[in-house]
Image: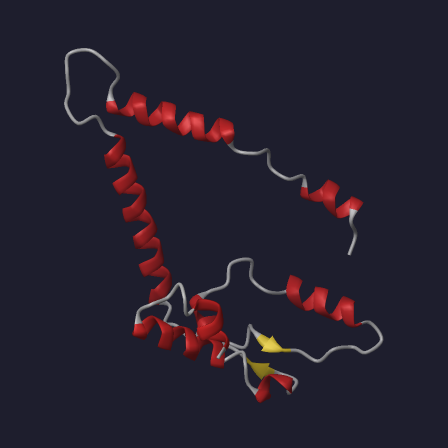
Length: 142
């Protein structure tokens, strides 16, 4: 039901709706209340026991132990899903670069590399500064 409520309006393909439903069934079931319930085959993702004396510390320690980027196994997908995702991102990037190329060439003007370089520098200049993780950690300890 959650998949249809949250994603039903945006995901219109029947197969995609079914896929989302199957993924969420891994998280919405009675077994997750059992300690050590495994969300993934490798056991990286599991339902951990909570220390009643310090539940917040238990959650923080377990969350910090998780990988920064979740792999496809948490969603019960094959490892090739990462390859497909990387390929799609690469194709999208290349398509964007092709769109940046001039449609016709003339004797004057900037080269393709100059245009792409200037656009990349412009995008980089507009990015916000990196967070100072150490300063933030000191200001807001957990």
